Image (cartoon, rainbow, N blue to C red; front, side, top):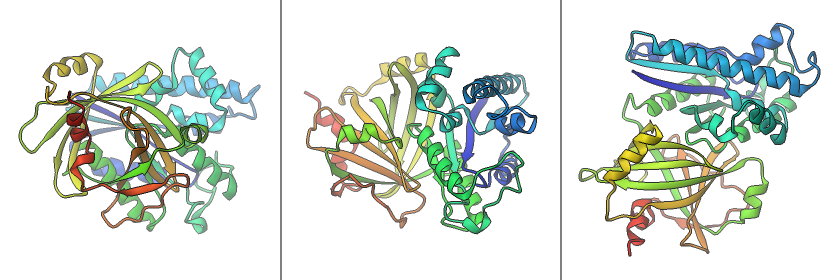
Length: 364
């Protein structure tokens, strides 16, 4: 049985409710049993349990996180009993959404009391899809009428949307769906991203890569919309024309493990399929490492800027430059570069700057 757990999140009035029915219709047709974990905050607030009715906001957040985690466990346990080959668990918000409603220290304190770590909680979800609030780019459609638990003004909705994106920044598969198109096309883009993630169609990844000046690390670590991730990437023996790698990804001793298969279609477009691994599976696959390449170690800063998701890779063998990547919805999409980043040149089509080539360079 294949069980995938994803999160649909976003700011107020972003289209999550409608998105859920689109997801049900689309992926049921593909043979998935689609399960929905309802939004915990709406359940609690509608029932009279809210930050303003509890003793403190921390008291409320403890209860919401505990209930959210237990609900997800129940859905996962139920999924394993079902007579089906593919299950898609869709969470209407995930545990990390709570981080947007308290300080980082408060969030970590609650998780610690639960015996959990932020990276562990964030990366246990397979993919995160953030729908941007209508208050940001589709202001005429922003309303609190579709959800009795919604109370944010337009300005508050925009600020909350930004905090939610920052909370999930650092996840290996975060996609931000903005309001640059009409609402129907916005939902089609969401469904297309989920298709791609699941590998149900040709999961094209459109990516551009840039060589940049070595960034100001203190600045990166000081801004809320950037998160540090430690990565060890090992290439495996693969058929001609394909690339196969495994990756350990996380921080502060908490890691997740992935296997990725890639095949290039054009300079910017490639087929990419990812599979999550257990630690034991990861260790077993290391025995199939390509001996002509050393493992690549790098520090990645995942950064959201203007509803775009950038990844900045810092390598131990460079002290004057780094690599910045962005995945795009289509090949002609405009890129709005973060302030504080200084471009040297684009290297999307330069094979010398691929990780597989950098791994060969390091062979002594």
